[in-house]
Amino acid sequence: MSEPLAEKIMPQSSDAEQALLAAIFLNKDAIYEAMQILAPEDFYRQDHAIIYAAMLKLNEQNKPIDLITLSESLQSDGNLDKIGGLTTIAQVMGANTISTNAAHYAQIIKEKSILRRIIRTGSNIVSRGYENTEDADNLLDDAEKMILEISQGQQKKGLVPIDAVLSDAIDKLEFLYKQKEGMTGVPSGFVDLDNITHGWQKSDFIILAARPSMGKTAFCLNLAENAAIQAQKTVAVFSLEMSNEQLIRRMISSEAEIGQDALSTGRIKEEDWSVLIDAITPLAQAPIYIDDTPALSIRQMRAKARRLKAEHGLDLIIVDYLQLMTSGSKTENRQQEVSQISRSLKALARELEVPIIALSQLSRSTELSGDKKPSLSHLRESGSLEQDADIVMFIHRDEYYNRESEKKGIASIIIAKHRNGAVGEIELSFRSEFTKFGNLYRG
Image (tube, rainbow, N blue to C red; front, top):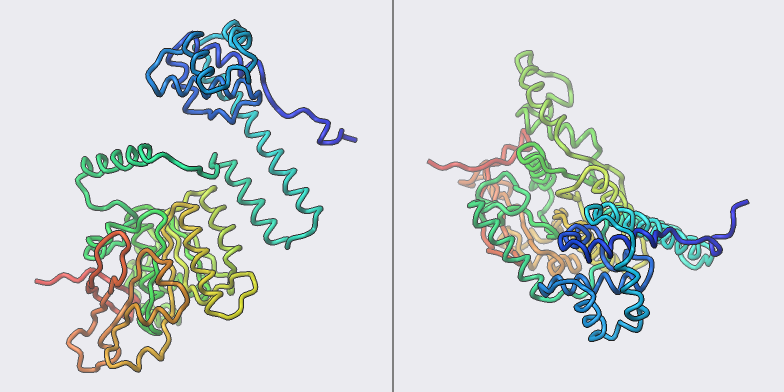
């Protein structure tokens, strides 16, 4: 029988920690190798962690790292006595080391640190399980999140000084300036739309709302196809309304421009088969992942999205549609539940650093107004969607309401809210027989 967990010694390598710190004393380049791999909290021994943190501070100040500068830095921060004084520094400086092996020592320290985090996480989950004070789904969700954070090397962010944020912003601006392109996010594939949004941005929560029969699902599938096929972006589609088979049929119809009736009945013209094969080939190779679980909870979606990102990467999430989701927790009414779902989706977008496009169904009652065009006021009936969203878009087709419309085959995409950019309205072509939106070129 294995010994109790509490009696076991945590994974650690004091020798590797001392060797790395000694290497930094001998070779100024060693710290640059170490800082790419390690943070002070990765050290097992507290005195080593404090010394390493002081070394990083000296390096940031462009000061040399030696016995005098290090001891002065530790003294000024009130840490010299905490590590055991000059004796401890002398022991570290005298440790056996090969300065060119700094990266190797750092990897050993990092591996031990990861093992300790796994042990602590596992112990935490086991303890909470024995307490039996929370539901299993919540515990499972937390367990998966904590393990995923370890595997991705992501820890909760603390307070960040503004100069660090400004530095990152300037670096990004310089990159975009050199790139000479306006696209900074995942492209929609629609020129006029991308000119306004510059692509779907990381961590953005986007609401795409429309009344029934406006083409919400068709539009979101076109967005998925364009991102995956044209830009090789990994897309997750969570379909709560339609099955995988129905979605694929729509995608094939859109890409091959073959009517859905023909695809549903198999009555395909002989000459269309080659067109069909040509359309299916890039679609089959596209990094699109579909989940058609009905009444999916936000907790289930979060777990699946985290796993997909860890295994294959993830650039865009599409949810069709939001009102069919469940929060997985008790709420007083449906409006509160929808608000909870939207807040959770926004949090997920930030956690995974991917844009999330959530479709939202507008009530038929909004059609009673004189102007059939949807607006933000119509969305306010659906909880906090407007407040949570970074972008709110509506689809409107005049020909649906007006048989004499001059805009037959044209759909308006109304950008009614854009937290970080312009609002406006663009027009796309819409071919309902193929459930396909397209760029509208005017002569």
